[in-house]
Image 1 (cartoon, rainbow, N blue to C red):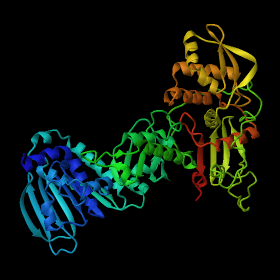
Image 2 (tube, rainbow, N blue to C red):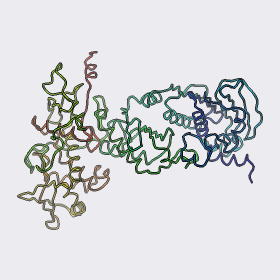
Image 3 (spheres, rainbow, N blue to C red):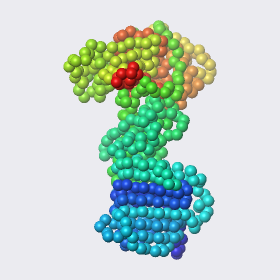
Image 4 (tube, helix red, strand yellow):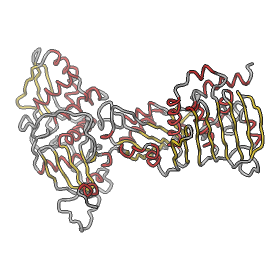
Length: 592
């Protein structure tokens, strides 16, 4: 049987990895004690000293003596309690493990006690316990970490790296506990002083001063007992390179979970270029019986009973938050990180009859259905004003779709007046989004998007191109291209889709084949072949920059864009809309 001090040193190897681990355990104890304010002070990156002071419930003398015994805890009583843990700590391992490898002083006083108590220990052995005068709360002072395990001390990083790790721990815990004040001091200098916050965005901007420039959007959703609150980044400001901030909390506990973060990233699909890494601050609420927190020595990971359900909920919630105009690019947004060439407009060609949104007349269209008060798409169009909307007129009922006055600029952009400013729409990007969602919807219904040609045309290809087309023939047929072999190096196109009257079917199929063979960004970023073909077709078939549109065509494009689920982003992840508020417009002209 190992002596207690040896067993505690072994346990410390799991619980106390570095100074940041000590800070995490001590701050969590303070929060479990109901602290409203926590102060963390360190010296030499925590190697020399770590001091955590709180104004929580404190301990009586008997509890102070017991707290250095392994598995001494007041937070659980029975094995069944492990299935409903509501505290950050629960094992009773942290304090004895920390004490085993340091010089430790604990000062504490409980509510109503006339005097407090002070305990000193060295290497896990209690040296003295004495009375002292102090206010309610607890202060834990850890000096010379790993004093009796020099090998562990030599594996610590530099002072700056260890201090940064402690700072990250405090950031995570402060984000999970908005109602608590946190102060962080390093070598006598105040690094952070975070007052209690009223919301996540307030706390985020208090920690990172530049966060207000990152285009952060609120997130809130509830479904089937699950809840999520938080803040996510506007797609046009997310970048593929540079430092990314991701913080995930489950039931108030900061954790690391790549699966949930990946689900949040999937919520951005087709709104950002491949490889883009938006900021995510997600606060999940999950029934206690659905999550197991007793799976990691440092309690930094959890196990979900129904992981797929959680991840699907996170993905859907993030995507829902990106549907509103708040996610649109603004006037002062930096250029999009990726440019896509779509070529000049090509009037004429093998298109069919009808307007931009021409489709099978037997297929019902959601954008021209009579709107009702509960139509989910109405708030999007209600952003706009009718051309004859007088300022003093009676406001339109919300279920009527106002029609803005539209102006085409440089045959590429459409300008519209909104109720509180203006928006500029990229006609190619907008039509790309419209076509993509229409194709996906038609594929789900099993609709036939092709129109049989009276005079089929041929396309000559290389052997490599023929083999690539054969591999995706079925997916091409699903978007409307019926193709047959016509010799060893020629394909016969029997039917084509007809997305708009300016559509050039021959040019579209050649460009699509080029992307299929070359492996474009859209093909690489798609989840499957069918989605890749749908995105590629939407890009190649959409009306081009340089194509002049009539008023009716512009209006039809506008109506269809704002009837999509993600009207502010094309399938490449570029903005379709840039907005400018009336206040910003007045500011540009020096008006107040």
